[in-house]
Image 1 (cartoon, one colour):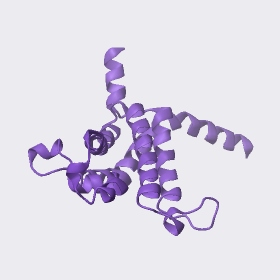
Image 2 (spheres, helix red, strand yellow):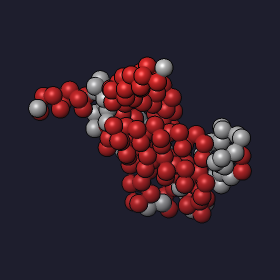
Image 3 (tube, one colour):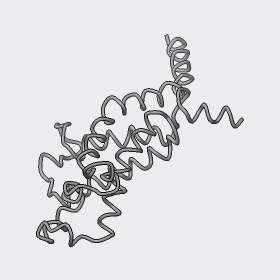
Amino acid sequence: MLALYDRTAGGLARLAPAVLPTLARLTFAAVLLVYFWNSARTKLGDGLLGLFRPSDGAYIQIFPKAVEAAGYDFAQLGLFHWAVALAGTWAELLLPLLIVIGLLTRLAALGMIGFVLVQSATDILGHGVAGDDLGRWFDAASGALVLDQRALWVFLLATLVLIGGGPLSLDRLLARRRG
């Protein structure tokens, strides 16, 4: 019985480097891709130039206290606010795409981890998320918005940082062409 277990475990261990990153990217696409793209869409300004002019909603989402302090007069926000809102919007659009197609997967996943950490800090410090929405680790509830869900997101992304995009990725295709 133990020999069968050992053979099975060995076979699974050999499959893991191919299966885990592919499943991680597929899971990211199924669970988070549309979430992040929809969020980015709310931050885009109108028309084609909206790619370079964040919407008022972008500033409200990213800098809620600064916007409130400015009396919702967005003209009072400076170059820093524009640059952060623009970078955040582009990050929400491009990093998930890179993960799904498996291009620069490790770097894109690391960028998304940073994004999720900043997003969580903004939710807690800027929007005042607390209590049940914030959640607690090591309790009976598993669906809290920040600590529970985002810990799983970061774990999924950390898998891609550590293992890469897997055999069905543009990273692998480009590596073969270089090699």
